[in-house]
Image (tube, rainbow, N blue to C red; front, side, top):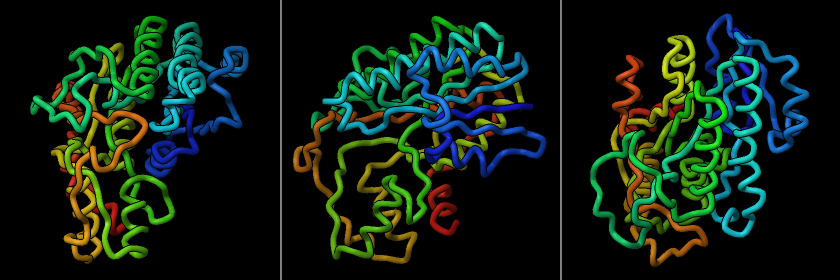
Amino acid sequence: MRVYVTGAGGQLGGALAATAPPGAELAGLTSVDLDITDAVAVHAWANCLMPSDVLINCAAYTRVDDAETDVTRAAAVNSDGPANLAAQTAAVGARLIHLSTDYVFDGPSAPAPSTRNTPYEPGDTGGDPPSVYGRTKLAGERRLAAIDPAATIVRTSWLYTGGRQDHDFVSTMRRLSGERDRLTVVDDQIGSPTYAPDLARGLWELIDAGAGRGAIVHAANAGQTTWCGLARAVFAGDGLDPDRVVACSTADFPRPAPRPAYSVLSGRSWVELRLTPLRHWRDALSAALVG
């Protein structure tokens, strides 16, 4: 089995490499190796693609706040790029698995309180996401599915590795815990933190099972919390006083891009494919903090 991973330099790309099963021939592609926004370059690269191959697209413009002003680049990576890849996998018959996000949903943005308390299913309409990041990711989903109907779209949320040298939320909290006496973190945005190695292992299982072709599925660690709740759990897991994390509202900590007040993803679609449910986020975080 030969598996190509675009966006191999990111946290999920690294986790896929670290969890690759025996016998998997993994080829990681960074943006230097393949610019997915360049249709000509993608077409030329696809000369090596075979029908038995799998392409996992982890490449994305994920700088949510920067995307509000860098709209053209965000659209190129999040929308044009997946369409370029889909054109080639559809032509060859290779399998495409595309990673997407909870931000594609158009639920109320914090600081407006969410009236929703039911996790999102894949069939829930995306509508008009409030952020440029969310809109470009949703556009990428739609374009990819129209070009390669056999592609699998996997949505996840609040992805992290937790390594002290990384730059995700958990990593940042661990680093700042040694630099500041107190941290103020928003407590009115609710989601499901997802440990990258758990998602990676789930993707390998998805490939091995041959499941989810032509489907949108959700894969996130179970349970839900707020960013403040996650930060306090990080402190507690590292043996620090969680009360050093102080709750605030989104209104107290404004950012350029609107954030969803509630974006929890249901794991039902994953279970319906007879795949192993991702464990509770607290268990995953404990593993991340000792890893």
